[in-house]
Amino acid sequence: MRLPSRKVFTIDRMVTSFFLLLSLALVGYFVYVCIGWNVIVSLSDWKGLTPSYNIVGFDQYSSLFNDPVFLTSLKNNLILITLFVPGSLFLGLFLAILLDLKVRGEGVFRGIYLLPFALSFVVTATLWAWMYNPSIGVINTLLGKTGLEFLKSRWITDSNIAMYCVVLAIIWQFSGYTMLIFLAGIRAIPESQIRAAEVDGASGFDVYKRVVIPQLKAPALSAFVVLVVFALKAFDFIFVLTGGGPGYSTYVLPIMMFRETFSMTHFAYGAAIATILFLLALAIVLPYLYLSFRREKE
Amino acid sequence: MRFPKLRRVTLYILLIFFAFLFLLPLWTLITTSLKTDEDVIYTTPVEPPLSPTTEPLITAFNLMKRSLLNSFTFTIAAMILSCLLGSINGYILTKIRFRGSNMVFLFFTIGIFIPYQAVLVPLVLTISKLGLYNNIGGLILTHTAYGIPITTLLFRNFYALIPDSVIMAAKTDGAGTWTIYRRIVLPLSLLPFVVAAIFQFTSIWNDFLFGVALARGPGARPASVELANLRGTTAVTWNLLMAGTLWYALPVLVIYFALAKYLMRGYMAGAVKG
Image 1 (spheres, rainbow over the protein chains, first blue to last red):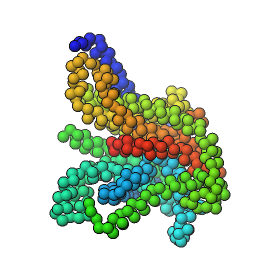
Image 2 (cartoon, helix red, strand yellow):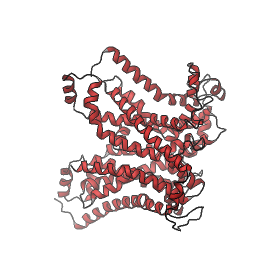
Image 3 (cartoon, each protein chain N blue to C red):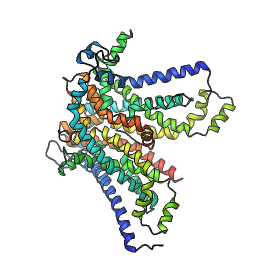
């Protein structure tokens, strides 16, 4: 047997430590230092292209809450949380149950339902711009052809319904993801439990209601966290589809943050919006991480 | 579960109806990108072209080829770097126990969930200071740094399944930590590398936010930003826009059809998007 020389061992250790420290430094800087720096900018009066770190406290935050654009954006983020999140969860659960009913060609259907989720938001937003185009777009011409003329609408160009058009399109994109999570959860339930319920006289959807769905709490929770965080940070899709318009009707916090910061160079103001977004996300993510770390330890 | 015949027919009608809804936008993507300007006006989007043409595809390719090349360059570089670092981190966090290793894991995991808006202003300032604004290098650095949390999680989950006894045996043979990684862990890592690489490729390729904040100039502009610009140009016709969309979506579509199985494993590992 070859005995390890002390030197080899040390160099070995150093190489591994080097890579871990490199990762820690990158994540430490780009995540944590940048978050802290952003908070500092949000407490300053930086406006315009020349940096200013003149700390003025919570001025930006108090102007935000008097800014109607901020309140509209916040309201639209809440619309996403209250409609898009449950919409994707329920449609995903429904699709997962359909696919669990011993379907022929299950893999093909699963592949079709998940496909939109793999695509870039820039792609799906462009596709939905074509769907919703009021003059020659997909939906209106289909409605015209099928005699449903009266359902035609101005879709994303109508400020009353534009936000709901956004919600519908991102449910389309995300329900394949929730389907995947729920399907994995369903398949993890032992066959014997389902048999037992069937012996007890439960049939069809009863089995799902009584045995399957109550056991899907863990996958539902993790999908919920992912969806809520997305509902807060949704940017690409809306930016490309509507740009926040018409007017401010589809403004969400990330769009307002981007416009304030990079179009109008209101750096401190934009940083304050970003900090609020960060705190909202943290309020969802930290309890979730705490729960899953505790579960892992058990 | 058994169902009466009528119910099974209803089931398949529902499944096909949803498949239709999910595929409709993609179908019109293909039909429209093969249409002449006249066909776009005289046929509905769902109808196939009357006289199919590849002209929009050729025009769109010429408009987008530079940005597609940019995207390939930084996506592949950042994919490789973030996977390598994630693999080493995953190995250290599962096989070399040290005080505070759980804290280190938490430190990385939080990075998966933060909305990137919270770092955007300092990120742009940093990248500019480094002279990497409008530069491929800036995008590689950014995507590598923000990719480490998720790749670390993916590799950690896989390495937790390698029995500790394998590592212990090598250790008693006198192998050091790096030697064990290279000789034992790395050869067992083909599957996690495939999963992490595909996951990273699609998420970096699909990114828009970092691209639009860090590289709007033509030198390094990603295909996502180029396509969004095209969409913002009012003079652009729908067949050209759809053709550009098709080119930009193509690499991800190819990966999806060839390797969906591995991409799904990435999504299920607590993956996030956006």
